[in-house]
Image (cartoon, rainbow, N blue to C red):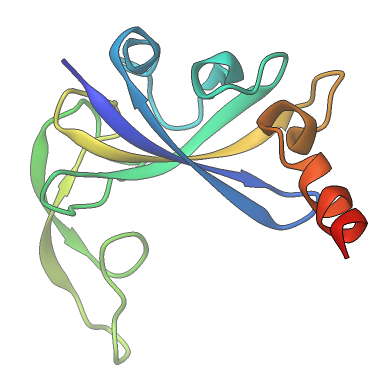
Length: 137
């Protein structure tokens, strides 16, 4: 059974929300590729659309958009995801994971692509926390 940690970024206010997804909700991500959109109901954001932007596998290897499939592949990189060169012309062979989400994926990065009727704070139950703490004082 697949289980993921999904990091959802909200580009409007710059916050990131972490979700642990297991079971049937995790199956919504299996077979999807980076750049595709997924229903936000899988992480509790009903009415929202999430765009998959990246991720990593159980060993921490990053997913790359330019590598097809879910498998590992050793690619020669000059920069980008998985390698940061320290001098001009530097290249390195790095093992990376393909762009398709599979059982071996551990973390998925996503961003909000389409908004629903309610705010994220309302859906997650975070909105009332600040007001309650002010009333207690």
